[in-house]
Length: 242
View 1 (cartoon, rainbow, N blue to C red):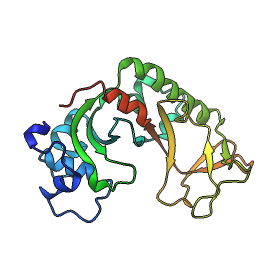
View 2: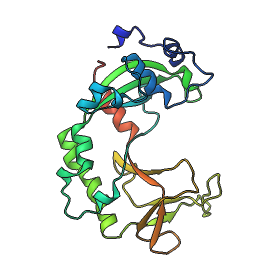
View 3: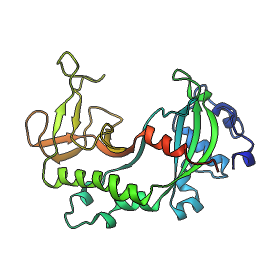
């Protein structure tokens, strides 16, 4: 595929020139849009290409170092709290299961020359297909799913302050104390939960459990499912480029 486009091992700024004049620095979210253009599409996401949308293809940019190590984790989807709170929902019927079982991921591979290099300098390596194995879905993913449901349904979700080594609370740039929830973490699982927000002072989700201040109501950022970068890159290293 990459040989067909004649762009293997070119920097992002060079790839961008084939379609439009690049800015001084290319925003991270533009990498998928560039890949869409290379595939003949006009949308911003690979999943919006008509053919790919029909067959359940999701595009994800994966950046590796020159020694084929991971540089960051990859976000998948936002938790469906209403569905997770449905006690009658079976794992095999859940949207959680369907996401991992039915989607095929088109990984857009880039190489980072160094941790200090701007995104423009990343080299496009090619495309790789990735799917989750049935074994992984029915073990790791199912376990993470069940833990999340248990925390939500049985109100065992706990929010705790994050502390520095000196025992003081960690405070973010906007002056808000940093907290963490007892959802599955990247230190424990290859699939994990992490909250995100464009505004750290805005926590739109209200969940039952034990908040860091001792109350029974937790105000949370939206929570997403992520895949650990090291796991994904290790799996992709076993797969040939398209």
